[in-house]
Amino acid sequence: MTLPLPPGPKGRAIRHFWERLHNNADFFARLQAEYGGIVYLSMPFRKLCVIFDHDLIREALVEKRASFEQGPGYKRATFLGGPTVLTADGDEHKRRRKLVQPSFHKQALQAYAEAMIEETGRLQRGWRDGQTIDLAQTTTATALNIAARTFFGADSGIDPGLVAEALKGIFWDFKLSQLPFNRYLARLPLPQNRQAQAALHALDREIDAIIDQALDGSQERSDLISHLVRAKDEGGVDRSLNRAEVRDEAYIILMAGHETTANAMAWMFYCLDQHPAVRERLEREIDEVLGGRRPNLADYDRLVYARAVFDETVRLFPPVYYVGRQAVEDCTLGDYRIPKGTALQPCLMAPLRDERFFAEAGGFKPERWLEGNDHPRLALSAFGLGVHKCVGEAFARMEAVFMLAAIVPRWRLSAVSSQPPVADSLVVYQFPRRFQMSVRARAAVAP
Ligand code: HEM
Figure 1 (tube, rainbow, N blue to C red):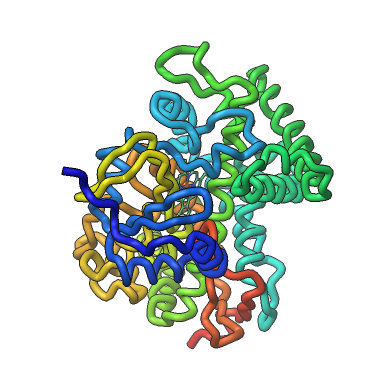
Figure 2 (figure 1 turned 180 degrees about the vertical axis):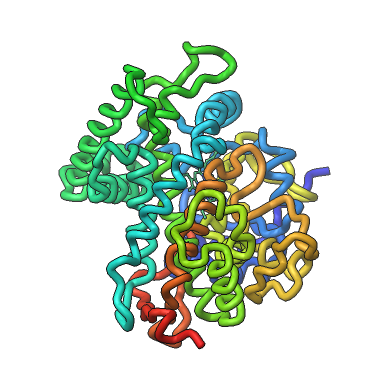
């Protein structure tokens, strides 16, 4: 007996395309409300299956992962010379994952922590009581400075502006990769193409310089690029990443890690403003642990509630709220047939906001993540599920906690407008630009 396709609207490919462009998160919510845990629909030139049900997401990402490869979006990007940890499948992914993972081990993170503490501390040094800041711009700039320092090393003196320009180029190329004939479009003499190429070439030169230093071995280096250069898997030296592979991995890690963390931190400060009892508890914890001094690495473990605040933020506002796959063969999910070539988008946000797994799922309740509390046993998190689960999770958590440790002792941020921020949700769940927060010195406002 042939299984049916998942339920879903018939035809209307162009309309679906526009609805996604307009507000993808709302579009997903409407599909889920109307059709349930799995939906099959038409998009221009392809069929799309969106999954909201936790068990079906697990089936796709874990049990039947061999039937699905990484989505075509990243694979088509022209700024990459070849596969990377995020875009590779099967054995190629396994090899890359083994080589990339040591760059995020405890010892590596310890060195990055110092850069995070310094950059988050520097961020607020120029603030004045009563000024306003663009929240997303502030967290994005901080994440960028941290990426520049941790990827290239404190001594490289790299200009974060250069990294920002390269990222702009990467995101431009990524946008083109969503269109047909993107390889030709990327070669047209458009100003954006020229800027992207110039920025990427400039960053390539910096990466080359770091690779040379890491290879000559005369210095003790603890930056991420040097970790990638020195990484060896069990196969031995000949299977290390070559120069071009190091460059591609550095770019993909930069792309995967920068926007995600910047957005998570912006949502986190917004949530704290909306929930004064949480903010006050957090202030008490940070005041007690730090007692007015500069944070250090050991404080990360002590700031238990701060970590819970971050966990709760990314539960409610997971920056990567859906992931992309493509069926490489005819297969099944639950009681449904999925034809070869179908694009698959498991929506990570749906189970994270599901009342069956999280009591008062719409509320902001960091307590649920504290030990001893009845915190959910979901396999899935905002950091994904299965072999492609985020490799930078510990990096992101550390960055967010040190950001709280830098700001919360001195400042309270409050939204200037009472209108809630509306996410731009086309690719990630992005905190809106130009959302202003006023900065008040705690000494001036705290009881
Ligand atoms: C709040 C911050 C972050 C969130 C929510 C997040 C989320 C995710 C998710 C959901 C995936 C799985 C993608 C998939 O299944 O296709 C992923 C993969 C990945 N993330 Fe993150 N991420 C964050 C921060 C970071 C950071 C800071 C880095 C590095 C500095 C990073 C590097 C990566 C890489 C390299 C992958 C690909 C792993 C693989 O395919 O094996 N991420 N991330």
